[in-house]
Length: 205
Image (cartoon, rainbow, N blue to C red; front, side, top):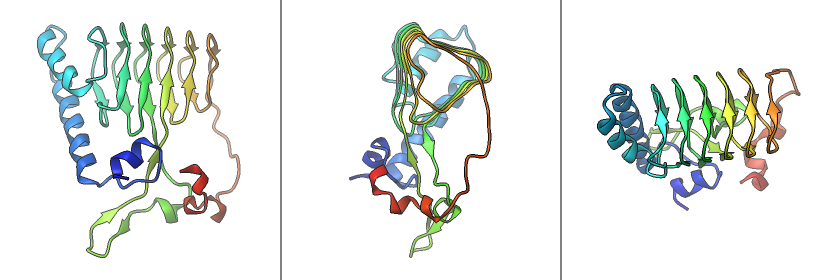
C-alpha cells in the first residue's frame, strides 16, 4: 500500500511521504489565499474553494479564516455554512451532509497519535531523515446539523442527522440522530502502559 492508501484506510503511515507533503502544502497555501480574500471577492473565493475542496457543493459558504490539512479528503453537501476559524484536519475522510451550520472556532480533527511517547516521538531513518508514526480515523456529520461555537470533533466520530451540538462541546463518541448533545469533561481514565504499544495491536489497523 502507498502511504496515502494507508492514511485513508486508518493504518499507520508516514506523513513525510512526498505525495502527502505536496498535497498538504497545497491545501495550506490555498487556505492562506482564501483567508486573504474578502466576502465581495466571490469569484476568487469560488475559484480557490473549487481547487481546495473539489468534493464540496458549490453552494457552501465559508466565512474565513479557514484551515484544511488536505481539503481533497473532505466532502461537504449543499447549503453548508461555516463561521470564522474553521479547522478541518482531513488526514482521513471527513464527510459533512447538507444543510449543516458551524459556529465559530469549530475543529474537526481526524489525526491520531500513539499514547506511548516511544511510538509518538520523532524517529530517524538510516539515512538521517526523520519521520513519525501517525494514523487517523474518519469523521461523519449527517444532514441538518448545527455545531455551535467552539466545538471539537475527534477522529472516529459519527454525528447523526438532525443533531445540535452545544457550544464548547468536545465530541469523542458517536451521537445518535436528532440529539441535543453538550459538554466537555476531561478526567483521568487510566495509566498509559506498554500495553498501549500500537505495534502490538494489529487489529486496529
